[in-house]
Image 1 (tube, helix red, strand yellow):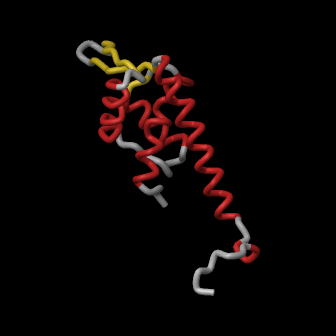
Image 2 (cartoon, rainbow, N blue to C red):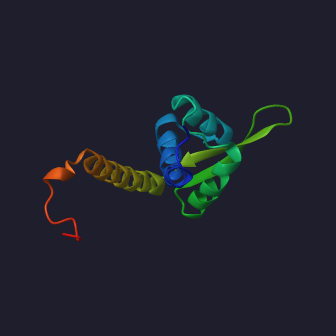
Length: 121
């Protein structure tokens, strides 16, 4: 089952920054394929859907881009994480773990032990 789009779009920036920080400079297709492979196809970001996130992060100075000739006529655009992007990644990662922890707490909570939550009583 594919993950919901809203959760995916919120995670896109964090995943891109994480990959760039830990893997090094990459191009969009490479990042897209990495995400698909690492999640065994459960999470996919087609290359074209990543570009709005790349452009937004370039505008915010989280990443930079440069072109590199990879063949006789082929040029790829590579992305590089900047210092502001590393700070943004720390913030997004912290926010993600706090949210995931809160969701897990609610899912595991024993509501039968909770008082005063039923307004009809």
